Length: 158
Image (cartoon, rainbow, N blue to C red; front, side, top):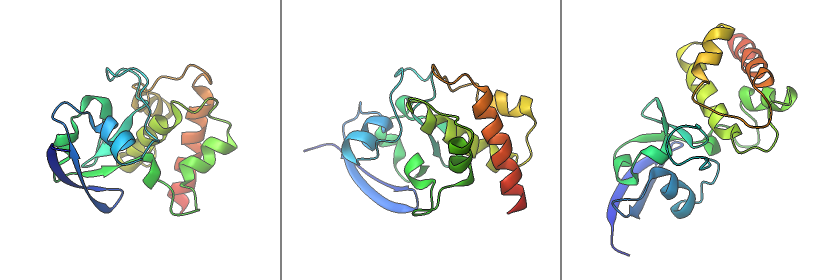
């Protein structure tokens, strides 16, 4: 296959791939690299299901071209856990039943991780604002907000 050669770092690992000029980062992650955690909910950046962190910034991977990953550091949901040990956010999402169908969950987790990296002690309003770019059709949002609050408390104490 001909295409654009890209060298990047994904979840701490050096990765190289070929992609077409029009291919999104979401398509590259899912179809070329087998990282299927990020989901395509809308394809227009409105739902947050495909959220990843690129160079420390939360982005919708459906709006980023795969070729733009060149030289970047990318974090996906697959890199959140440490082997078998879940990240505190993942643990609290399970504990608070803050998920149902799971399509939106990876995006919410990445958005929450981004928030807690920048603000380890957010208010409920700050949590709701940080998660506003993520849509859920199943759970409502209260359990998700409570899970993020609980995880923030645990992470502060760690």
